[in-house]
Length: 318
Image (cartoon, rainbow, N blue to C red):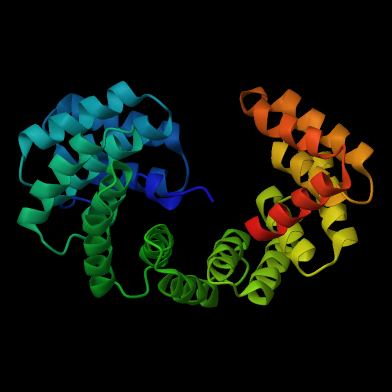
């Protein structure tokens, strides 16, 4: 399971209007309406007249970031932070920018100052947790997320992020609880059904895992990871035919998904070692760095004892 999926998010925001500035309010309205170019032109106009207008700098930085001009975005964020080095929102945006660019240490340094000024800065807490997570400081990340949930207990972002972290820390029951809470609020989220299914699988609740993988696939029929994990659960339940059907479907969606070929070979080992061998050969071609593993399985197809060994290993590994 891919880790830290949600923790990679950089959360930028648009400042509220300052005073009664007509142009600023107009720029914010353009942004909210999705009129990016009009908003950018308006912020340019504001900053030409007043280069130290902090809110306009931050909001223009948000726009530059959306447009993919990260150098200009950083310049605006840094100018705003220089003008007011202890404004928690300015620091949070700059930290979020660095987090999104994969500079977690720079992100943490800005979040730290923001949280010194405002210990209950929700976005700084959630995003500092992301930065800690990316550096492997899982306990620190968990503390930040727990604090964030004390502030906003119903935050979907914090709930799901904590569930991801709980899974990574082997707190599977807590992960299941978190995903269940998240799915109550967002019952059509295929990814969270998949994630909860993985947590159920980790505590050997295979029936629950199969049900969640079914839901994930029903919501998103081309969801390859969910199809693959459902194939595993079907195989474990003895339904080899349905497992193979899922694996064949994966191959039509993504014909370079190596695990589908290897697992097909494992399932076919007893009944059809020739087909098993051909699937191992495809896997070896697509994944040459692991050629020794595939060669070993190909060699095992030559005897009944070898084929039974492959099946036993496959059952034990699920």
